[in-house]
Length: 140
Image (tube, rainbow, N blue to C red):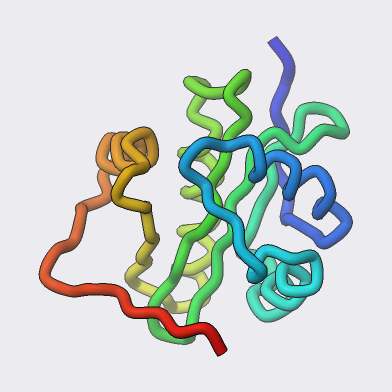
């Protein structure tokens, strides 16, 4: 079994990261996931997003940021060949620790309704499904 290492995500990881994301069921990509947009996100949220590595290969990701009040997690992805090894949990914990160090005491994430695997994962690791509000979006 290979040793997985973790490090801060950098824009140099983009090609492998976007390839991983494209192959994950339930993970929806948009124009906000372009290299330019991800570079901007990583700059605004320095040190909060991570990759899991097997040698030189990205096998897992988490995008994390905050607005100064609440944290937000996006694109937690683990290559199917590496699932069941707590890699996703370790990425989440790293990002949550960094949020806490920046004074953020609550974090949110979004899971599409039909993403059963995602919903099961987040419930199993202790996240609570919220109700009572809707998310509205508008393209600018």
